[in-house]
Structure formats: C-alpha cells, structure tokens
Length: 303
Image 1 (tube, rainbow, N blue to C red):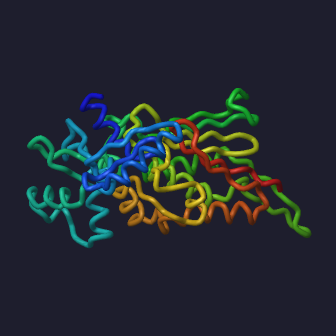
Image 2 (spheres, rainbow, N blue to C red; image 1 turned 45 degrees about the vertical axis):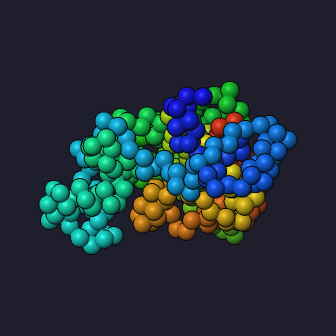
C-alpha cells in the first residue's frame, strides 16, 4: 500500500471495514479487533491514527486562496453571529480571523481555503470540489427505468443548494386535495419540514472526500430517496440514528449550518422525520447503507 493510498483511507474516515487505533492500544484490544475482522468480511486497521482528529471539512484545498472566498457573505456572517465588521479590520487581521475560524488554513507556506470554507463561503466551490452539489431526478413511476419527468444539477454554496433543492422538490410535488366538511383542503405530498431536514442532513453529513460523486435525490411516484456518498462511521448504527444519537463527520459544516439556523439540534433530524411520517400514516422511512452510499427513503403517504 502506497503513502497516498494510506492518506486517502485516513481522509475517508472509519467505517465497518476501516479501523483507526492510537499507538497506545493494548495488545489484547488489538487482537480482539483482528479476530472481529477475520470473523466478518475482513478489513484494515491503521495504528498510530487518532480517530477523533480526522475531519475532512477542515483540510486544505490546494491552489486556492482568500480570493476564492466571497468576503461579502463572510462579512454578513460575522456581522450577524459575531457582531463585528470584517471590513473594519486590517488585511492581516482578516486573515488571522479566517484562520482561527478554520475558513483558511496554512498549507505549504500559503494561506489556502479549507474544504468547509469553500463549501459555505466559496465563490464557486465546485471549481475545486466537483463532488459538491446535488443531482436531482424525478421519474413517472417507481423504477429508475421509468420515464424521466425532470432532471436538475444543483451546485453552489451548500446553504444555497439546500434552498434551491427545496424549491425543485416543491415544484415537483403533487398537491392532492381532500374534502374536509364543506371545504377543500390542499395537502403537500411530503411535509416541507421533513424535506428540509433530509436535504440538510445529506449536505452536512455526506463524505466529501469521495470526489467522484454528488448527492443524488431520486423522486418516484411512491417515495423519494436521498442518496449520500459515504458509509456511516463505525461508531454509528442506523438504530442509534433512529433514537437521536448524533455524529458529526463534518463538524465545521455542522457548526456553521447550525449558526445559520439550517440545523435545529444535532441528532434531532432523523427522529423528527420518522415521527412526522408516522403521524401521516406513511410507511416508516427506510435508512440503509448500499455500497458506498447512505440512503434515506421517505415514502409518500396515502391521502
């Protein structure tokens, strides 16, 4: 295995086939990990790696600079949440603030953007991160081979992707009406609060180190699927997610999206989605891993 391959494994993080262990691991504990792998499908154990300090969203992006950031949006953010004006600071002070905020990072003697810095504040994030964004498709049927009604590629800063995708999904939803007494009431095919949570969850928790894949949102007659690149970290199970156990693959994205009110409370999203869809009498949403994707399927209620 080459050094580059090891770096890629570390950047991708842990999953059910990859384990990171610190150098101080006891021989007995290491032996147990090896036995566990040998009794399953096998895997890789990297020793000397701290599994708590690896976050791809604050890693440096080569060939970028402060010029790749939209300073106006950063200024608005700091004015709103930190109550000071970036434009009143010196150039050196601005760079120091952005370094301390993990928006910039020192790399190879230069100040470059971080992955998260580009995703939240970049002028054109996909120029350097082509995996950013969402591929949306709407099919007239319940199979991917059925007639394609609509298709969109949505890119940009992740908060803008979230807003645009909400509009696209809403425009593609049916609005069935029911008679309640003498009044006709219109109902959304899917509650927008559920759609918003699913969208933000996908954007914030996907594995951005998988460079060839965007998030895929597939809309069918009976369901909508949110397919995020990257398996769950090995400390998280689907059952734990259902009861609100949170994880932050991308803590930078979580922090900034939380400050901008896109995330209400970490870990609350999946239980809320399950509760809302249950109240509508829909089939329970399905959470599963398939290949290198995590999939959230939300089923259309029968009105």
